[in-house]
Length: 250
Image 1: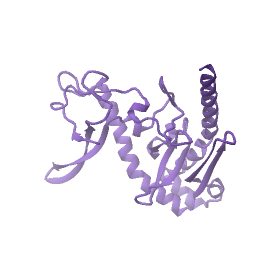
Image 2: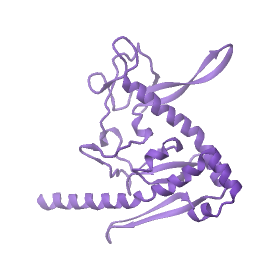
Image 3: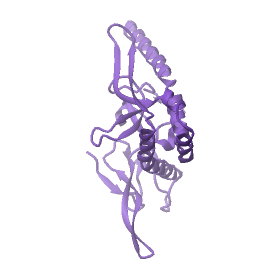
Image 4: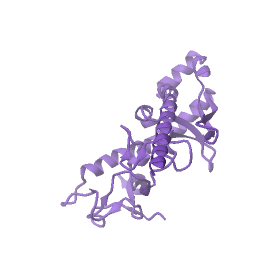
């Protein structure tokens, strides 16, 4: 159960965060949310798909990490093996909250950092310190602030981007069907992607609008990321072989 508090250098002066990755920290998941602000980094490692939020019905972006529940093919006993960790994971126990603040006589809702004190990453003895002994922010916390800002901006940008993709009729459903053996096959449903055919057929005015908004590049990055499905398949084959070797040795 989450226990969120507004982060401050008095109540949390000794706070440390365990930054390694493992199943004990909830990292063994098949998908994580991703955002347009990190598409450039994400697409180098993971396939990007869209799905509909079951609560709102709105589209959201996900990075695919595995083919079944509780499977992250980038994760093993030594950690998470990728050049880029999606922001929603890299943020650790931190999240953005909002606080009313008086700015020149005007009340504004300003983003502030909260921390989940019930997170298994929280420690008083192990991990990265959040604050310096004098009370200032550590480099680690500065990095977290950058990650959270990317998530915050990405959330705001996502709705506008998906509205633009929908208006241009670029989003299409896709089934990811993978067969490793007669006993092990996966059919991932409820996923969407960008239609290459419709993207190529767009008129100049629509292309101009998408490009001006910065969304055209996002569409191309999503398409390019799908090459990573083959990478995931190869990773799955290697994991299956290792598991078979361990079983044989036992």
